[in-house]
Image 1 (cartoon, one colour):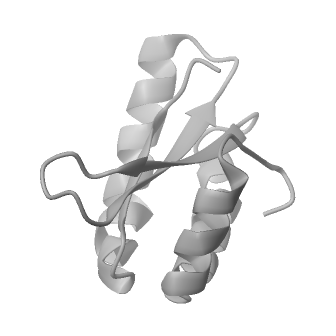
Image 2 (tube, rainbow, N blue to C red):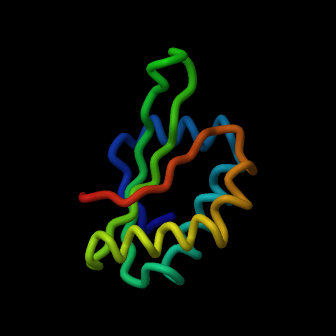
Length: 101
């Protein structure tokens, strides 16, 4: 995951420590997304869960030089082909979405 920009590094490190399955799932997702979005770049951030006050959501932002609608279509294909079957492999909620930065 060296190619991933992290905005709140300590929170992400804590999340990875608390749920060891995340590292493998994210590494595989980052390896697979370029099959759908060849120029993909990535950012990773942690957002606390405001509804429950405990836990949170790990966001994998995908940035691309594609037109937004084309990038969104490509990400939807990735979701159907790989993410939906693999999302349940971690205890932590992970959201993969297009990111502007």
